[in-house]
Image (cartoon, rainbow, N blue to C red; front, side, top):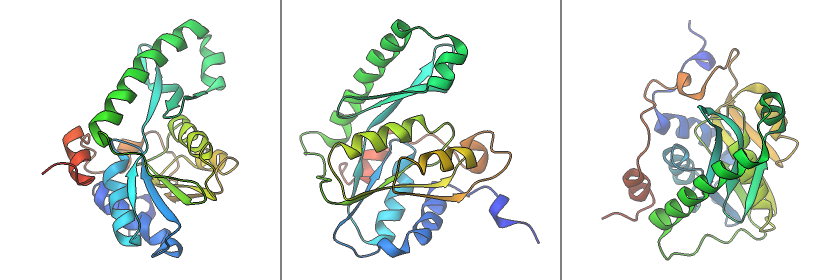
Length: 217
């Protein structure tokens, strides 16, 4: 019999359903909100929020990719002026501060564009005294999620929970020192990349994000 824990998810919807099952203790609680890291985290988070019967919204965070190797995160930025730098990557590659600044400025423009595209004039969901569940479709280096945790904490929530369908075991363990809890449905070894653990890892579009948020008619 195949080891289910080592099998890829069908798609982000199935991943969200399985993740929600791990978060059942948060169902029907009026102090819980689910925040999705767009774009890939939105279909996952929608299933989580639907199953738990709690509100959900987007929480915009942008990875700072190493120039020429953009999939490798040297840090991330998030709404609220948060910038998180991955010192291991930056120091190992000798990336100067001005290069980080240039990439951060470009990603800030995209962050602001997404905020407008997804939210428009609607105010962000208040997080003070809430249990905030931050959801993405997976964790590789964790830089983007780490920035999200930092940004969420600025709003003084009661608790911050990181929840993903799949992640590198070391990254899930590292984030457990920064979040109040980390829920990783699967931590395969070797991990390699998030996309390998989905049969369908088609990029989520802005239109799909808006539709899942109920902003498109």
